[in-house]
Image (cartoon, rainbow, N blue to C red):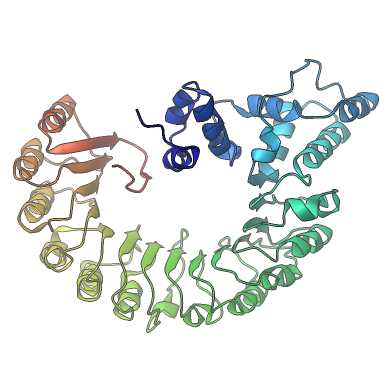
Length: 472
């Protein structure tokens, strides 16, 4: 059998980076596989922290601590390493590309919560100095709230962060820490800012303006915001308007910042408090927009935004529409989609019985559609009869990925009708959320899996946040 070289194997396993169970099962196949998978797992070890794995991760990290550092801690009465761990086969520390200082602090505080504060502080310093060294190359850095340790003063920090691409930090960050971050962030391409209600540091402007090319920005706020400060931040971000291609914001902006992003490809709007009119979207022109994701944003302004794009939208997610929206505004939104998005491939939309005709037009006009999420909370079972009828008669030939969300079950016969009329088409990938399913439903779906109508099926009775479609 022809052996795949390590580069090809790495690319294959990287596709499984979110499937930790599969990666773990491959670790023991052979030495080459083990080396490659360890690289992937330790690129961002913080993402796999669950099921009480914090202590194991901490033990691996502390096993790299030098004898001199251990002796120094012991001299201060900090006897936290009573067990002697053999130095690991891999240099795990320098495999990390993501440095999450918040997770490190949380783990230490959880493990040593009964210790005196000065002991916890000393342990953190040792760990920070261990992770940040001239042999490490971090691309992602996460700074927690109230973090006050000047990591830029650690020997080797300049080289350690010389390839930094992403920074997540709070706008109330300590001034001395902020100065150090600004010195290290010229290569940064992605920035996530979490704005506080009070005590925001206006010197954050220097950090925002330091990168030569900023492509990706998340601007996250609470319900109550410091508007003067937000205006300052927005004006700083406008200076990167020519390069920013992804922008996420959780409040209606104070300035005209959105209108300056003429090269924007991806826009996410998340009004989780449902407090804003978002009239800044009216008549807003984003000609190169390809992905639009919104949460609790009124349909009428979303329709206006879509009407002013130039036909490049291929992904639209309209989630948790504003509670003031009615069927008229929902129909207006659906019309805006099928009249202005000819290459649309993925759509999440709320549907009611009054939107059926517009839904039919959407299926007819959006022939590139391959993934469809329908959210329907109508209590009338006939609504799902009509939805399945539409999909049977008008679904584009490329459409095979479905996600149905409802708190009221459809009839078993309706689902059977849908599957029976899918014969001869590409096997569907199916996710169903919240619908009340009895054993009959699972038996029915299993029978259609066996005959190839359904390729893959997932059901969740409670969690509304399914992963995006990533099945083969």
